[in-house]
Structures are given as C-alpha cells and as structure tokens.
Image 1 (spheres, rainbow, N blue to C red):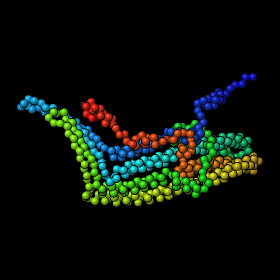
Image 2: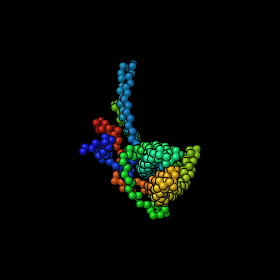
Image 3: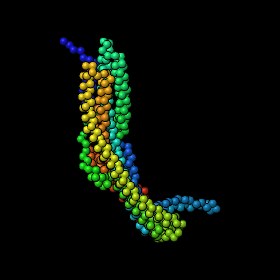
Image 4: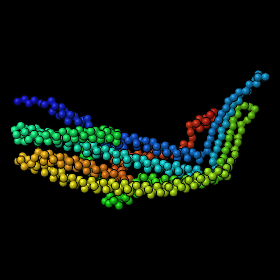
Length: 456
C-alpha cells in the first residue's frame, strides 16, 4: 500500500535536515566572543586610548629640540639702471629647553598616567559590553521559553474549547462554562502575541549587543565560580575593579599637577640657534647661537591661583577614590543580594511548578466526575502557567546576577573568562608611538636637500 506524504510535513523535514548545514547553534561563549569582536563601544574606546597614547608622544617631543626651516626667493629690479637683483635664502632655527623647573618631565608622567586611566576605561567598557551580551542571551532564552509556554497553553485551551462546546451540545455543561473557556482562550492568544513581541524586542537587543542576530541558542554552560562569601568578593573588587583603579590614577595625576603648578613659578632657560644660507654673493652665510632665560616676576596672581586650584583638585581626587570604592561595594552588595534572591526563588518556583502540576491533574479528574467546575480547571491551568513562567524568569535572573557579580568585582573580562579569543593588547600601539619618532618625513627631505647643496 502506498502512503501519501503530507507536503507540509515534507517541507518541515527538509528544513530540519538542512538546518545543520546552514546554521550552527550558538552558545553563550559564542555570544560573548561576538560581542567582544563586533562592539562599536569597544572600537570607539580603543581609538580613544590610542589618541591618548599620542599625548605621551607629544609630551616627549616637547622636551626635544625644535628645528624649523624657512626659505625665501625674491627679485628686485632697479628701473633707473635697468637691472634686476635676485635673492634666495634658506634658514634653519633651533630651540631647545635647557631647564624648565621639571615641568617637562612632569608633563610626560601626566601623559603616561592619562594612558593608564584610559586603559581602565577600556576595561570598564569591556565589562559593560560582555554583561550586555550575557543579558541579551539570557533574555532571548527566557522569552523563547515563555513564548513556548504561552503557545502550549493556547493549544491546551483550544482543545478545551472544542471539548466544552461538544459537552454543551449534549447538555452536560452550561453556556457559562463555554464562555469561560472561550475567554481564557482569547486571553491565551493575547499572551502569545505579547510573548512574541517581547521575543522580537530581545532579538533586536541581542543584535545590538553581539553584532549578530541569534539563531538556535544552546543551554547555557555551568555558572562561573564565585567567591564563597561576600567579604571575599569585596576584597577582590577593591583590588581589581577598574573604577577604583581609575580613581587612584586620577589622584596620582592630581598630585603631579600640583608639582607642575609649582614648576610654572620657576625660571626657564632655553637654547636658541639659527643658520642662514644666502645665495646672493654680496652676503655670506650666518650663524647665531643664544641662551635665553625667563623668570615669572608678576602674573597678576594667575600662577598662585593655578597652584591653589591644583591643590583643591588634589583633595577632590582623594575623596573621589573613597567614593569610587563606596560605589563599587554598593553595586556588589546589590548584585550579590539579587543572586541570593534568584537562587532561593528557583528552589521555591520548582516546588510551585510541581505542586501546580499535581493540583491541575487532580482538579481535572475531579471536574470529570462533576466535583469541580470549568472555572476551577481554568484557574489551575493559569496557576501552572504562571509558576512555569516565574521559574523561567528566576533562572534568567540567576545567570545575569552571577555575571553581574563578576562585573562588580572587575573580573568580567575576556582574559578572566578564558573565552578562547585573543584579548586586545593596548601596549602594542603605545610602544609604537610613545617614544615619538625622532626624524620626521620633512626632516628627512630637508637632509636630502642639504646633501645635494653640498652642505653638512
């Protein structure tokens, strides 16, 4: 006997067989790696860090000799004598700071400390990006689970509507029972639409967080290990959190700025020199060398005001360190409490789901015997759906809170999580530019010009 194949079933079968070839199930690790590679926040922060690296190069360059070249070409015509005199000259000027009270060295150190500040900003951004990816992943898992529960509930109620109508036709139930079941089905259909919308919103959030739209999401891996106690977690946070480290570095910068304000009141000495080459035979080449000193005698009180301002900012920065530690501890306390709540809620929700399932089964059996009403059955089904949905939310909260604790300790990084992706190394660009190239392209060109002119 030949069996007919349902076209719809055949289409589903083809899609199922083709799925492994076209898409791969995504894990939480995949989501974190995608977020790390595709985040525009991280790319922007890396560019900002590289720009800060150039500040070190500028501070180093300020302590080196400044060499400038100037050239002129001209012609003078004497009308009475009908003659023309042409002139051409090339001049080189040099300026070098001999002593500036230490301001230059302090400026270099401030520039270096600013680099360290932006490195902590980069770590902070990395943590935010990875936590957003975890949240987006778990949001998708939660909303997909809730949609599946809502669709299952709608299917059960649709069957129940058909059965209740049949019983009404034979006079076993009243019209009120039919209306109650139909109202519950309408509510279930509305709930499905709501869950579909929430899932679509989470899908777009996932795309923003990771740079990709989600496919099939795998079951999350085991939760990462955390310290056994809140006190241990706080100890780690106070040592490693980038916000606290950034505040400490800013305090160090404030100390340096006080020293720079003092240095601005000291004398400064510089060396100047110039070499002129004149193509006119009537005048020869010139060489000039000078040492210049400058002492700030009276600036209208500006230097004193700058010094006092630096001192006040130093005091502020020290208070900011304590404030940063306070905020980190507060955040850690909050997410630690949320994690404890989520764990306790999961235990309670599991018991609630088991009890609600047993209650529903019993109420259905009693309803078949006429001891329970249709409304009792509907209420039991609603209670089970709510318990299952709450369990899904609690599991979501446990994962997000666990990674939130890692972020509050300053450990939510690619390196600490060992994601298998190469972390960005800020030292590569820093080493490339921090020393400031000693010979620019223009200086090389000028060197070639002098060589061709026969000058050393």
